Length: 505
Image 1 (cartoon, rainbow, N blue to C red):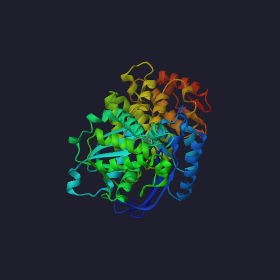
Image 2 (cartoon, rainbow, N blue to C red; image 1 turned 180 degrees about the vertical axis):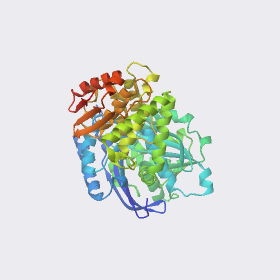
Image 3 (tube, rainbow, N blue to C red; image 1 turned 90 degrees about the horizontal axis):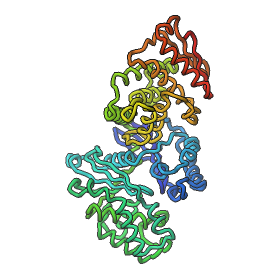
Image 4 (cartoon, rainbow, N blue to C red; image 1 turned 45 degrees about the vertical axis):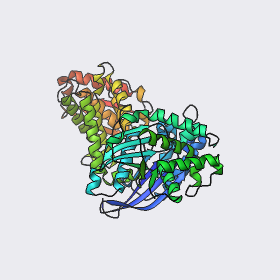
């Protein structure tokens, strides 16, 4: 991107929503504005894991303010990501439908490991770049509102990533519900946190990293308090954590906390955050942790800067890895992909040569990925392989992809064959349906696992919800099974709000 381009990242965290705006300057991003609002959506999940109306409204109100600030930004200049609370929320689609409209931009719900990867990118980009730093093995820990991410990496490359469902908001609600600080409560909170984090013992042992860094929320708040008390700025030690615990116990209640350096909005969740941080120090035998300046939102910004290359490559390698893992037929993958792309280009000529950041370019790229993945379910069973494939995509770790992006691909794979009733809600999307139709027709035309004759076919969008498949004279006689399957396809679409018509077959 050109120098001077503005980029913006929105982080919908469990405790706070953040907006970071920066300006590109010779490959670096310099902050021009930062907004943070304490939303506490993590407190708004009820027993059934639904966001309460009040929690949703708090989020919408904040995003409305962010949206006003982002007026004038292009789509390619903004990315919004949501983390653990919206990963958990059963009614997240209800929240996101309105949230995207209010913000004016898409919102990606990212997986825990993808969040960890982006956190590492943010931390690494804001650390000094020296020969020594490229060799330094780093442990990065981020304690958020409802999850804790741990990463081991070197230079700009994250090597090991994991996300654990333990965080400052969740642990404060569970172990300090009335804001009371007692020795017993902290002991129980630390033991419970260690039970969740126990899996980290084998992966993040001290001999695998040289320096520990802490990012964002809880760790930043603890670092501020210890620095205000006379500690070394940007450094958290075991001694410092012991001193802070004593201060919390002496106060006895969050409302009575009077500690220099601690913001008012952090007091309600500091008990849970400190107990998780102490558990991390004990489990991983950390003596000291440096407070990093980078965080998730910075990782998002730098991937926006490098998105055309790094993210595209990462997604391509992710799809290739899945294709290889599930032993997809590479010849059939190529055949279906080329056929689906050719049909989609007939419907959307603007997609030809379009940038991957444009709407048309993104749509064409998703068709290609769906084609590569359309038969991965056959590794489980040839019966209903499209259903198995969709399940795999909805439940796999896919670096570079957001949860909603993978769900989009899973729905294309699910809908590649059979009845369309199973896609009832997705069929309302006028961007999705042309992709689905192109993929379904490609699967039909490639049923014999040989290159189809596309010269005799024409796919046209007659109006917004009406498609026409035209066949040249004699094509149906040359390919009777394909013609039969196309007639069956027309019948399948009759039970949807969309109409497909066959002419000449």
